[in-house]
Length: 257
Ligand SMILES: N[C@@H](CCC(=O)NCCCC(=O)O)C(=O)O
Image 1 (tube, rainbow, N blue to C red):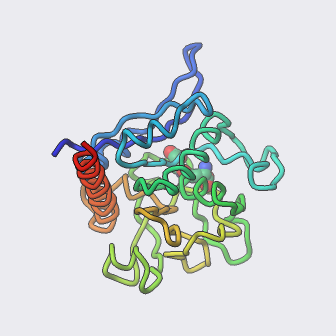
Image 2: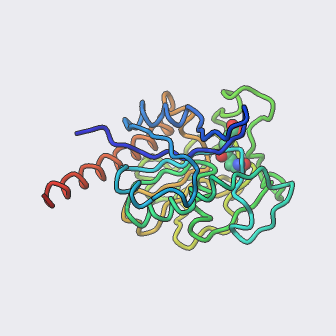
């Protein structure tokens, strides 16, 4: 069987007088080396993309983290200095992509900004500067530090019993990293909360009655997937779901001939 293809979200970034569409390499490393998949970057070209054709061609979708935030007006909020920076091109691509992937049963793993996009795409809302809330942890990584320090595993999340993450982790508590200022405020109706931090922050969700694997996590399993078992489990579960989806599509294609 061919190596399954996954579309990976990109940020639109301006430098050297160009707009570049890019994603950090740890997501690609985890996709290739832990999940056993073949990632292709999806440019954030919004409604210029034929997402139906894309989702008939690729076997999974990985929506990555980013320092940028979902534009607040997309979930009834107000844009302000406080809740930027924004990436409109990315929002215009990932939100419809997430909805279509879920509808078509294409496996979806959404990480950090990705879980926030998943929540907004399905009608939920976000809160910003969550570390300022009464009793909240500081979920931001250390600001002026190297990536290994910023993405250090430093918090415990409680896994909801009986959910899909409980089956992936086979434990009730998982140690994770945390590098975010925003978080799920009102979960979308179709989302099942799969893990929470001790301060109540939603740390993982799945899509109720989704035809395929559809999971969002607020932490960054890609960063330590090469050596941390819990991080690797998420990418291996995503990889398995993608392979099953690809095999089912191949069988359907053979049957149709
Ligand atoms: N911007 C959102 C999502 C956070 C996120 O995806 N973090 C990735 C970290 C990228 C980096 O800083 O290197 C939020 O802040 O909640």
